[in-house]
Image 1 (cartoon, one colour):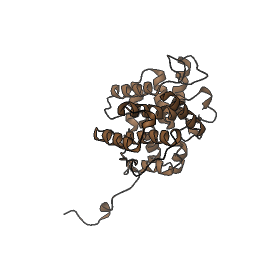
Image 2 (spheres, helix red, strand yellow):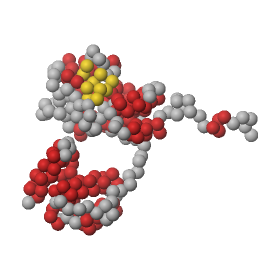
Image 3 (cartoon, one colour):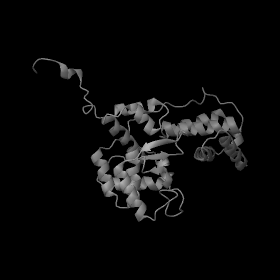
Image 4 (cartoon, one colour):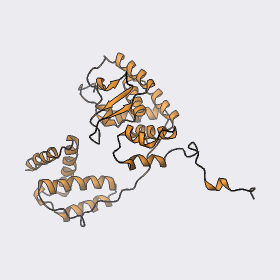
Length: 282
């Protein structure tokens, strides 16, 4: 029974030109909701969605995760079941905006040095030096690397808009060493050793976690940490935030604005007005 609903879900996702990963995510969250509540797809109501989300929140589920449930179920109810959604009864939750972890340049170098596998080293160096998302890194192809222009053609982005990212000379040296040592791949740049297709995001996350520990860094380091660090280090070096926005592929400038809160203020020459007071200390 549920299969026919999920087939329709994928059709609705496709008609809106949403990514296949979005469709899979929706299906995962809807399946979890139906399994945990024990109801059928045609039995979904605003009341049982509300009850489910309240129970999940009481169990400690984060607001961000609850909003993912909300988005998936809402799409299913409106687009597949063709019912109205009651925003008053089942609203989205306010999400706490925590500042992400930022690594120093010295810490990033330690992680890269601790990564002995040349393929893994090249992936980490590329994420940091070009500010790539992990989803963008895994879908890089050999032809996306331009030595002559010193840029990387980034396709299949989150914003659905291709862009060019900067190609570091140091990173190009690492990429070249990797390319020669690992069979000169001419299609997918970082293929999975098991399937030959795109490498799994979870595998990259495990590589990063292991390298950070080996480097003696006990901060919570994720794939996205390198992108955040790239943005902050660019801002601290004097690059205008408009250019950083372009390099990161942010459509909304507010997404880039957050890095102003995370840079080294002393490095940027900003002082507290208290330091401008005259007179001797008492």
